Length: 518
Image 1: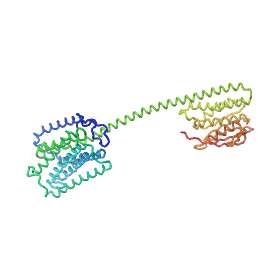
Image 2: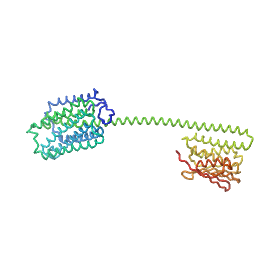
Image 3: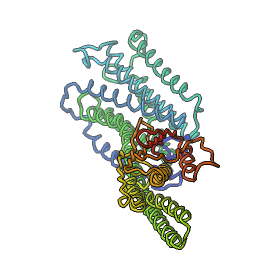
Image 4: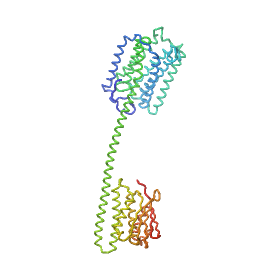
């Protein structure tokens, strides 16, 4: 089959058969015309030898009728589906034409002697076979011509969306009812039907109906070439089918009898005619699959490009966050150095001690940002190394070794964020500083562990004889020290609870919820 002009996306309501090149496209029919010319030349070349006796091909009639039945039934289904989309009356009439032709092929198979049962038809008589074949030809020609005229006079006009399904169902049932009525008439009432054969010759009625069907096919083909085929790809292919049908009838007429070259080649041409629109839809399906493949490739490429862009953006964001945390840590170190310089100029011991505790708090903030710089996701890190670094720095700053105080740390690798790590670090800093200042302890233990799926507990215990100030959530701010107020405030911020006991020293337990990672 010749390739058609490219078909782009159609406007709504016209389906996939409307050719976007429009009625002014001079090249839309060129492939069809070339194919028709070749087909006509081949047919004319075969006409002189059409009456030559050919080989008797076993089962040619049942195979011919069965192939036409299946092919045209499938084509009618595809045309009905196309009508549901395009809602064009011409498509509905064409779908009915192919449905009618497929059903009549089945009737031809049932009434032809020897096609199914040896030497006899399944239903009817040999006269029924002639009438079935004639009705098949004239009915298909009439419905096809009606579809072409409708497309010529009212292209694209059809049913509303609400009535499309009802129109398709009604049309299909009407065709079925007509075929059933025709079957009953030419089988049960064949004795009342006019004769179609007078010996070996046609009766005038037979000749009139045959030539009328050929005239309808010829008129439809001419109308397609003149106007309809210039704007509609499906009808251009229908023109090929009608040309093959016309050639089939001409070769059969020239052959005159069964198993002549004309009769056999006519059946072959009829099979070609039956399959042309089916090939059109297969071609459309293949085209749509290629379009979907191209769209999928384009989409996959866009997704890949977008993923690469997002990955690059995320990498840049990580670099930026890492740089921010690094600079915050450096800035806090600068602040700590400035505070150390100022503290050395202060003679008052209490003021120097206050500066030292403030430096410890700044140190805690700096260690948090240092852990974030090392974190893979720049958002969470394990609390264990953070507490180890914090307590090591506090031990150095508070001269734990010189004062004979041993600090031990036990911490589970619990992932924490900046919002949780800073309060915990400041609380640990204040509790440890209190122990060094007030208790006279020799051993200090810091423990952090999970107590449930969503809770953790911080424990700071010492063996000092003098208890450190007891922080409580209800502490009187006017009486409590700054450290106790900080501990109480941060615990409230975290939604935690403080428990303090004195058994061979002081033990402070703070239980708090563990936020779910975002």
